[in-house]
Image (cartoon, rainbow, N blue to C red; front, side):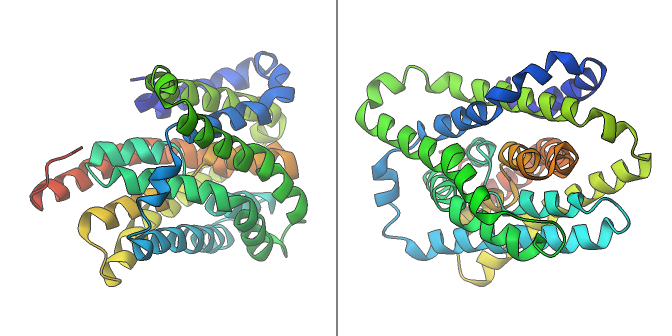
Amino acid sequence: MISSLLWLWVLIITPVSLAFPNLFLPLKPVIKPLLGSVILSMGLTLKFKDFKSLAEKPKIVLIGLVTQYTVMPILGWLIATELYRGLPEVFIAGQVLTGSCPTGVVSNVYNFLAGANLVLSLALSGINTLISPVLTPILTKVFAGKIVKVDAFKLFLDMVQITLIPVVLGVWINSRFGERVKRIKPYLPAYSTVAVVLIVGFVVSAGRGKSLSLPFKTFELLLLGSLLHLLFGFWLGYVIPRFLGVPKVERITISIETAMQNSGLATVLAVSHWGALAALPAIFYSVVQNLIGPFVVKLFNWMIKRAGRKPAE
């Protein structure tokens, strides 16, 4: 219940952190480790054998990876450059970075609720996170490098610390001590939710001064940008695999994996490289994907039922 209401907690924490910034500003030294622990929790849901089981379907895995790292960064760049004209350039960088990050942990929950291919979902999330330290800096540099300064190497080092090491460690722990990990698995989604909410609280507090000085229309554009980014991500994440002959259940899985971004990671990286204002696109994306996502999941669940497969098998 805690994790399914992430959208509500984000909506609550935003005005609270604006009103009482001193509650969250002391979190600055632990923000990166906190996010790393969230990535670790995702790794704890995976085992090395999960990756081996997909060796029989390399085409589907490859399509899922390609849609993630082409559709979302390109959409982020196109939408931001069109909608955010005249706004601070860091908004474009923040939207591109959000689209260039790996899939979010919540995608696994949504795929389960939709009745999609959970093994494929978990494996894609893991592989996405493993390769993100290389692809995210490159894509951000390519699409946003002419707009703002992008230190791709520093971004790479940050992502190795925040994503690569924790996810590999999590997979190893679960593979080595699976029976013990089972005891804490039910609590991991709730922990990840609390951690992400605290990160959002810190970012909003850190950017409070600049954020409150922005006109209301800016927030409307950021909201519209995130909504378009998400919906086109779902659509293209479904249509492209369809043209490539991917079965319905698997293309639904890929669609969810494509659109659901790790906005917590994008938030922390944006703050680290360009300041708190640059993190606003990621924060808005977090709110939008957790508000709209459940309705899209219901649609996908209906599609799977109609195809004759029971949900959440």
